[in-house]
Image (cartoon, rainbow, N blue to C red):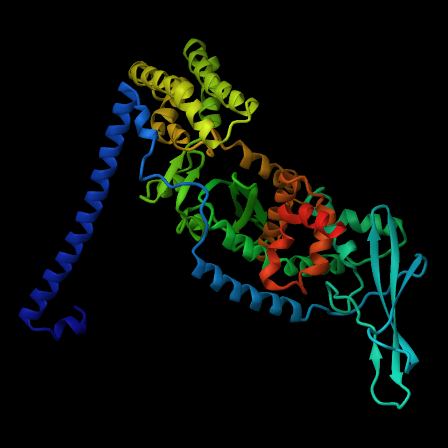
Length: 506
């Protein structure tokens, strides 16, 4: 027995045991209440399948969250302070470990920079020259910055032109070259060793470690923008979520790769995508983002999402594309019943096409769905409820019915709001670039490298959704991120790039 327990009197020991029993009973009662509430909700769902759902359930439900909504003002103010400190840190962080020699055969573009202000009473006493290796599509060149020095005729003080902010302090790559390297790797899936070969063909010899270092430092510059993206993403009230594997060289097992995961979050209302790397596919992997989420959560049938979807402040949406795939797999098993289910699901998608062709707003889409989709959903639900009783659970048609049967409320939940989508296809499209990249570079070098890659995957996915040239966006962002006011950092988001560019041309 523990010495601390031995020192207790009989009465104190009894009191302690009773306290522990009470604590256990309270926890157990809470668990039973949650289980009872869940079972009641499941029973209610099965009754809705059997007898159909009423239109009123999706009209004016006070429990449903209105879209869109924003983060509280106090959280926005706190985030601004964090962002200000982050930008200052990234800008001042030492990031140069030695300067590579520049090739001598490349053309040189000279950029002369004079001090600002009145120079009429000053004389030029010299100049400082800074060179960087630049890249324009299909053309390498050297940019030579020549900064003239001026001193007053009385010999007091010196003025010199201000050198533009560098992405890598004292390093040779320009923002254009770094943007090209990152775009080639993460957008066009060209590994660094192949880029090194391309440089060599132009008689530009860059060590692999140098290329890796440039890539790392450029991605670190994006950290403040990514952290702001994470903050803004958490204020969205409608997410689609999926996950995809990535092998990481850093592993506890010698000679083996670690299986990490990118958790991908998509906000359909404004086309924002966020990749978040986590070492696990378990519940801890989604905790950083989903534990504070409130609103509509649309996912596939993975158990981690099901757990979060049961929270009181979350409305869980399932994906009709996943339900349809299950019935498509059953065509060889039970063609008659599989075709019947697919036919009704096709009717639901026909309504979505009709809404798109008529360019309806959210209110119009909801009204059309309640008028035309709800009757189809009720018919399909009653049919599944009746047919599943005479279906072998382990047959493919049985699995297809079980998939929809167990998620019926979640499959119907898109009727609540016209902003909601019928399926999760948009987020799956955002992950395709990652799948192509995996086939080329195979793995990430470390957990930190995988998370840095998550940043650029996020921004390039947003570029794609908003028809933004990823190279131009990245070059502009790397050029300006260290000097931009932290309050204006969202101007650097890809979704704002085209508008900002148009304003600067006016």
